[in-house]
Length: 180
Length: 296
Ligand SMILES: Cc1cc2nc3c(=O)[nH]c(=O)nc-3n(C[C@H](O)[C@H](O)[C@H](O)COP(=O)(O)OP(=O)(O)OC[C@H]3O[C@@H](n4cnc5c(N)ncnc54)[C@H](O)[C@@H]3O)c2cc1C
Ligand code: FES
Ligand code: FES
Image (cartoon, each protein chain N blue to C red):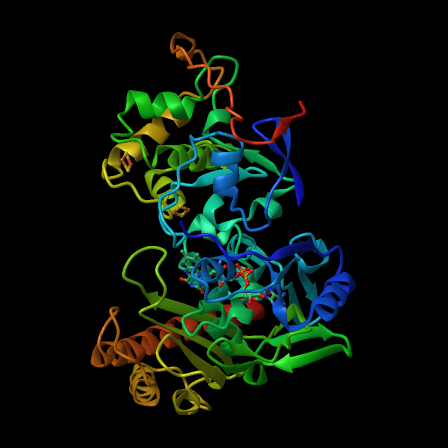
């Protein structure tokens, strides 16, 4: 079947099997491998992306169900060469070690801060409670999100210093077309 | 790699259209709402529908609406919407108690009340909530619409009154004066299914005695409400010794199975302790509501 959806602001149209999970569509068809896949039971949360602004587990949404919706992945966090404050916060406060859970954590943090710009620690812990980190023990993740809350975009923190690697979506071995 | 077996996918554009599609594709078709019970089961091949009918575009089923002395909740209402609704929390505090501990926030962004009830997993929290609140399920099918009381909705684990060619459309909750409700769950970790949970709803008479009480258990091997426990309270003033007796009766009535979440005696202990706690809290909340009614 043919599906179209907006991913990080660009519209993609692809021919897929209905059983393709959103996480696999994003990783394998669009080549955006920043979204990770970690379990078969909808428990780990490393696959979290934003669907119409809300964090969802992309391993438990069919790509077909996401058609027509607006998806944001970790590759869509940085804008115009500047890291999102959440990304900067994870750097400043050592919010990651291996980085496996990090994309999902950062997207949940972004959605939380969009809704509640000054969460307390308990609210941050609650927001990420469906996501597992095997490395950091969560304390540094909470501090990273607090850093982002204290340094919202456009308030003059020196994010522009941090070069953003240019990650163009690889559309290798796919028939996805970029429309915009 | 765990992905579902092949199927065909179609999006319904209205309730009528969904019913047509169910009729057209027959017993091998299934509707998908949030997909957070069905897709995991399809990955495990515990479910293998040939047709998946997506009802996520049916915004007409996503509503919370006060209608006289009933609160109407559309089947496609997400857990997150229920959790965040102040109107629901004010009328039925049990819903917020339960929603706080159902799965985790990302799962709650997708899972729906209709999916929860139709899944009818013995550990599903909202089934108990709907039971104790005496909700009514509104079901539509080729023959029209019918309303089914919760007692007739559950037919056993994973089985409900919703026929293969039917759609659960809404839940209707009776709003009662001087009412209070509460839910409490023991889970091994955030996002886990209940080891055991209890829910209670209480209405007080004008003189402060218990007019009606309902106790329900989740994941403890009882698919009806605990009539024995409720009978202890009726006509009496809420008191600690009555909660204790109700807890003892709930523990005796349930029939838990031992599993990795705990042995039988522990689960019976949960039935006892959690019944006392939810009754205590539901009675206190009912008294608060009665006091508010007197003021206003
Ligand atoms: C990691 C995880 C943890 C969870 N923990 C809990 C928990 O602690 N407590 C709890 O209660 N639940 C828990 N759940 C389940 C969660 O609440 C699901 O969202 C819910 O059970 C199903 O809702 P859904 O909308 O996703 O249903 P779906 O998966 O879309 O559907 C479930 C079933 O209902 C049918 N169906 C759905 N809607 C309708 C309708 N309107 N009419 C007729 N049939 C319909 C489908 O055909 C399917 O058979 C958990 C799920 C996950 C993934
Ligand atoms: S991959 Fe683990 S929750 Fe999605
Ligand atoms: S940083 Fe390794 S899992 Fe979180």
